[in-house]
Length: 451
Image (cartoon, rainbow, N blue to C red; front, side, top):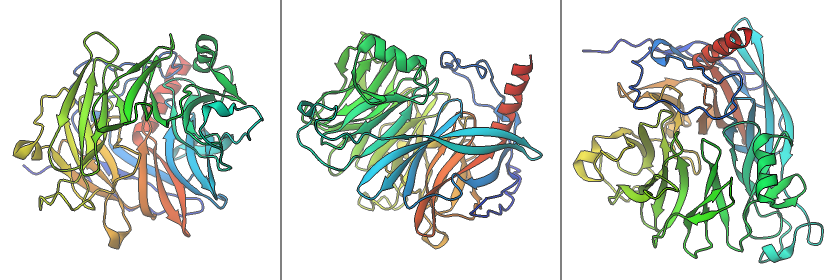
């Protein structure tokens, strides 16, 4: 039987201000709930809000450039805070990089919520030798300061980022927009880390530490480290300060990502020629074990759990021609997260969903909060990598006309704001757009506040 789907209506975008309306996708049945979603602690007033996405049309509107008059820099890797109060953007400035944080003020208009970004902080460490940072923590001194791999805590305004502090080796630092934020002050009081300006350094090794990710319950951090000489995953308990090595393979393990219930960590592992997908089950418990999810001769990277935790998606070089050396032909797999799917072969091909995807270097799959739709940039050079939306249940994809080009770094916030990177006059810029999912969430939130 043919599925009846509403056509996507053309978006008109002005690069300076941006306007777009009424991109619609028919609702799909709500995904089966294997277990209740875990809501991060102290999430007022969004705590307890659950939407039936299966009854909503997916609409994307009001595409706008994040900053109307940005400076001479490239922007990339947008990251929303869990409650959509902030968006962080990494920027490249000459020989160094910073992170800009914008407060997303939400205004009501006739067409629905309108986002009004205002920059509130620049995150960077550029102290010189003898001005606060002890050189014993670093192998050498450099004038450049690289600050990147930004990620938010699950509640409040605290965040992690990787920095060489302008001096050499990379470590993981913690900061917060609000210096009285619960997570920030808890780390300060419990762990008593070294303080550098407004930030605390959580790792103190002479080998690169990075890719820090906070568990959804806010209690642990997983990160990749070269301290073993090989590249392995480590687990830092934010309550006790205990550090535990998680992986021990001879390959390099990186791009860790948490399951929504904070019990499992999926990651990429491999060498020069190909990578596989593994998962650490029951992290930090006596039942902890490492499980291989994917192992074949194609390259597989950047696993991401769907918001409901039922599936894991990842980029793969599998293609219809079965050419393992065609690394420009990236696609996307979606497999069961419980390990019940096949690990290789013809059976695994049934879980191949999207072909010709633009693979981002650090961003995983941009899942919408319904755990059904995915936003991505399609590798079509003649159309300058247009944005598409894919339905994992119907296996249908739909183009989204945004008026932008060279699109990538796509991400979706927990309640449905979309952001992506595109080129404007040779510069990489960040764009944002609200969706009907976010609009409905705001209505429920407003109702909850009123009650």
